[in-house]
Length: 70
Image 1 (cartoon, rainbow, N blue to C red):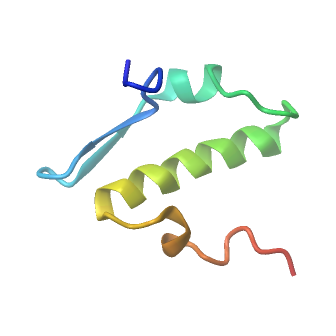
Image 2 (tube, rainbow, N blue to C red):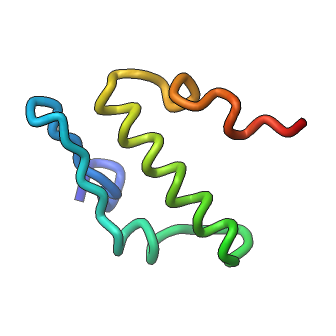
Protein backbone atom coordinates (compact mmCIF):
# COMPACT_ATOMS: atom_id res chain seq x y z
CA UNK A 1 0.00 0.00 0.00
CA UNK A 2 1.02 3.57 -0.61
CA UNK A 3 1.31 6.19 2.12
CA UNK A 4 -2.37 7.11 1.61
CA UNK A 5 -3.81 3.59 1.44
CA UNK A 6 -4.03 1.09 -1.40
CA UNK A 7 -2.56 2.21 -4.72
CA UNK A 8 -4.99 2.46 -7.64
CA UNK A 9 -2.19 2.79 -10.23
CA UNK A 10 1.56 2.85 -10.68
CA UNK A 11 3.48 5.17 -12.99
CA UNK A 12 6.75 4.12 -14.60
CA UNK A 13 8.01 7.43 -16.00
CA UNK A 14 11.19 5.93 -17.42
CA UNK A 15 9.25 3.26 -19.32
CA UNK A 16 6.42 5.76 -20.04
CA UNK A 17 3.91 3.25 -18.70
CA UNK A 18 0.89 3.40 -16.42
CA UNK A 19 -0.38 0.27 -14.69
CA UNK A 20 -3.93 0.46 -13.35
CA UNK A 21 -4.95 -1.93 -10.58
CA UNK A 22 -8.49 -3.01 -11.40
CA UNK A 23 -9.50 -4.56 -8.07
CA UNK A 24 -8.68 -1.56 -5.85
CA UNK A 25 -10.33 0.77 -8.38
CA UNK A 26 -13.50 -1.30 -8.59
CA UNK A 27 -13.82 -2.64 -5.07
CA UNK A 28 -12.51 0.18 -2.89
CA UNK A 29 -14.42 3.05 -4.49
CA UNK A 30 -16.69 4.92 -2.10
CA UNK A 31 -19.35 6.09 -4.51
CA UNK A 32 -22.30 8.12 -3.26
CA UNK A 33 -24.46 6.28 -5.82
CA UNK A 34 -23.47 2.78 -6.91
CA UNK A 35 -24.67 2.61 -10.50
CA UNK A 36 -22.99 2.02 -13.86
CA UNK A 37 -22.51 5.72 -14.69
CA UNK A 38 -20.82 6.53 -11.38
CA UNK A 39 -18.59 3.44 -11.56
CA UNK A 40 -17.46 4.30 -15.10
CA UNK A 41 -16.94 7.92 -14.19
CA UNK A 42 -14.75 6.94 -11.22
CA UNK A 43 -12.67 4.56 -13.37
CA UNK A 44 -12.26 7.29 -15.97
CA UNK A 45 -11.09 9.74 -13.30
CA UNK A 46 -8.44 7.24 -12.16
CA UNK A 47 -7.20 6.91 -15.74
CA UNK A 48 -7.01 10.69 -16.19
CA UNK A 49 -5.19 11.15 -12.86
CA UNK A 50 -2.69 8.37 -13.65
CA UNK A 51 -1.92 9.72 -17.13
CA UNK A 52 -1.62 13.24 -15.74
CA UNK A 53 0.90 11.97 -13.20
CA UNK A 54 2.88 10.34 -16.03
CA UNK A 55 2.87 13.58 -18.04
CA UNK A 56 3.57 15.79 -15.01
CA UNK A 57 0.36 17.76 -15.52
CA UNK A 58 -2.81 18.49 -13.63
CA UNK A 59 -5.64 16.10 -14.63
CA UNK A 60 -7.84 19.06 -15.57
CA UNK A 61 -5.20 20.17 -18.11
CA UNK A 62 -5.62 16.91 -20.03
CA UNK A 63 -9.39 17.18 -20.55
CA UNK A 64 -10.56 20.62 -19.39
CA UNK A 65 -13.98 20.33 -21.03
CA UNK A 66 -14.76 16.84 -19.72
CA UNK A 67 -16.77 17.86 -16.66
CA UNK A 68 -18.21 21.16 -17.80
CA UNK A 69 -21.96 21.09 -18.19
CA UNK A 70 -23.47 23.15 -20.99
